[in-house]
Image 1 (cartoon, rainbow, N blue to C red):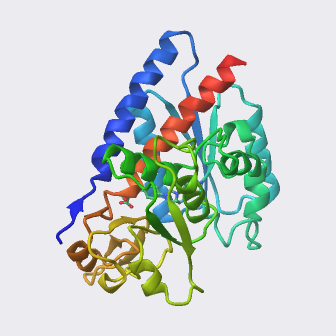
Image 2: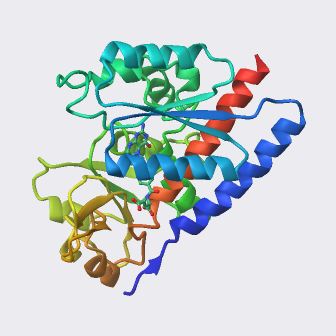
Length: 304
Ligand SMILES: Nc1nc(=O)c2c([nH]1)NC[C@@H]1CN(c3ccc(C(=O)N[C@@H](CCC(=O)O)C(=O)O)cc3)C=[N+]21
């Protein structure tokens, strides 16, 4: 089988367009301009690319996208104060603390990431990382859907790829992708996104025995492990749908770098019925759903 390419970039552009229209309507009806503030500590190159993409996407959708750049020397206390000031600022609707926080930050001690993320007001937590938002999601009454899994749900929905009754294997159990992804696809009623529900879900990870065999039993495989090209063609059954969440920078052999996913694309594309590329797959969708959440946050705060 030769796979259809699932064009995340194109679908993300559609979603951003839709969000842009809704932002315009919201502002015309008297609402404030939705504002997303990203907090970027240090100078990690990948984080800089991501934050720049995000702020450009905000601008195009009529959202005020701000970036607070803090030096790597920032202390944990200072960072917590920054977050608390954003919580208290009525002009700011969404707050995103860019991860990972630098290992050499906070005077060389590194940051307690959990502590910093927990300081974000759950009503402004557009990443949906806070325990309150994770709990609401788990119970099928989400406030915000986490951006990457929601982007995947939108992709499946808009490509008419149903997961109902199918076996979805999620490889990876991170709080950001693996865990919420599994929960959302297994929901009874599609409360965690349009119609995309009722899957039978297996969560696999680095300690899974017979990983290849389990992956081969997947109708839909979601790879979110962060290991470059770990999922080979031998791990994919004929006709499976493959969603590659990995964004790994590897040497390109010419002194630069290139982006590869967690899936060996060329091998997988020979087996799968449909597959997301890297770049141009899940990454752009993550940003589109972040804009969506920022509008939701502004609407919820405005209603009060
Ligand atoms: N608080 C927080 N929230 C996040 O959502 C978050 C985060 N921290 N830290 C890092 C990860 C990763 N992530 C990406 C989003 C978009 C692309 C993206 O647009 N990628 C482009 C390529 C970009 C490039 O050229 O590097 C693509 O796949 O086509 C990549 C990575 C969000 N994350």
